[in-house]
Length: 481
Image (tube, rainbow, N blue to C red; front, top):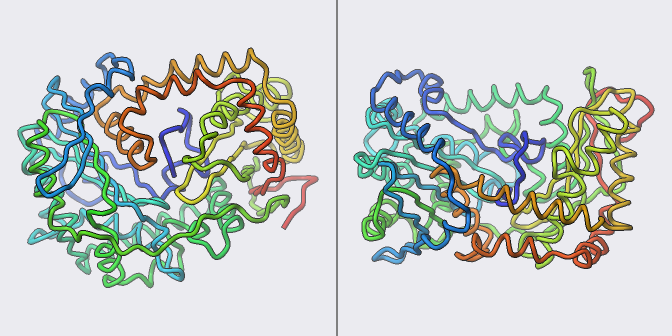
């Protein structure tokens, strides 16, 4: 799931870390979960450095691009670097293209379990020794998987950079997949699946993707199922890692206290031993099925969760930015969107209502969602559908366009207020193939959008009037199946 254009809001059923297969780890929590001590003074120091960095007044987003350097290692591995010596900190974000979409058809969850185990021992270090080394050096290292990528990140103090990159090297080139670690992480993953099996948002998201993408990798749950996860073997994990972790599908972004020359050498040291070419199974471009239907999943809760999805534009589509602005007007703004005004302010149907785009590698999607009283679910769905049709039939007003432009341009700099955020943005821009100058161009692209552009893209998206709706709860006056 693509994050460059995500608006700032609580995670939605299809957009959050759980749906993407991600695990947002905070270092002390990670160590406690793994039964390790986290009393190192170095860990405290790194936490203070990160906190200090988050308080630094962010520079305008456009100032970042003039500092982006494309680094090519002696052996041809590329990375984007923003060198910053303000604090003694280095942050790296990287991705291997080909995530859960590479899971065997009958065994979803392999990518997710593999990612969870990459930091559970590597080389001659078992899981306990591996994490002890990370803790002693105040190194944050984690991996996760989504539908399209296996992602990783490392953060370290400059003085521990060599050790941090050495631990990363071991994790990606010599993972162990020891029986003890596999069973422990498998047990944790199964527990998480059981917990999420009663969460309405997660239920809605998994059902929506299963109905929209039958017989396609996007229809499989990223973290697997209670039936599939127990069948995953160490051989499955090792095969996935060998096929997917390669230099040809690697993207890297680095921010912090490191020179281009130093980074070039580290890239070869960390990733140089990986296979040259990934062995990926081709994934077909796809559009959602089941549009025009409503699926109701009974659950004894006081509020029904509603997830409405339809066809959208892929990120590479030249009209994507216009669609992005159109969506902001419909439901992308927490307080000024049409959905907010009609569903919450005018009728008091729900506390939160929103719409958003999701640009996967092989599909473009457009979602709306809310949670409302069971007896008002049908009414809420009708209002949301009416607003979809209204904006597609008549388009927005000039005042709405001006307001959307002002917000979208002004809020962009907030995505660059920490080194990790900058690295994450640079990584996503690489994955989306937007160009190294995208940050400079982005606000100009927003400003260039006209009412004529919005009306044109609305005509292209006319099919979005037909949606696949999943409801989890006990809605009255609503049926589906």
